[in-house]
Image (cartoon, rainbow, N blue to C red; front, side, top):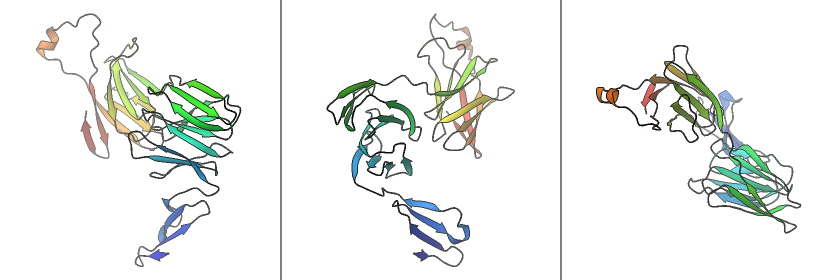
Length: 263
């Protein structure tokens, strides 16, 4: 199927695994994926995200696919007949006929973050606890198992600004965070900044501590953040914080493609 004028002619073609690509004639080496689907057997597994317009499907072709985005997961050699999102929407549990359940991080673009083993037969059903911390599974032998989700360390990078006593972190949820240094308390207060569309793999202060550079994993982007130290008013200068109070750190300004956003 072809269309367009002589300067922008396109062709579409379908592959065996139900994928449809569009190819621009003058740029044939970069086909664009229009549609994807499963290619063999039957579809059994279906999961709908609790807060987003996302629907995942799994089938006998051993793949998991998101029909609203280009997401394709295929880590197993046997059929997948059960899928279930956690209530908080952070993880997707995938039950296969290999007697295992794989856990994927949604924000990390379905990066595999865990595996539940111990079943003696294929996975038939799964249920999350309401707090998303526990997973219950049933298998073909009638065995029921319970798994507790670990507190996964989602921080990929930490760098300190000793001059201003501030830490910057980059995590799997696409967040850049600032917090006071030294940070010795669990659950310490912080400020967070959005920009990347997927997990952030690294963050570093510039040599003069005026900028933070972050790089994204799946989005392949580089962000530059302007560090703005807090400005103390005369009232604040006279104020003595009570013991135990944790003051929030200053803020960052994102500079990307010539656009600045202040948070």
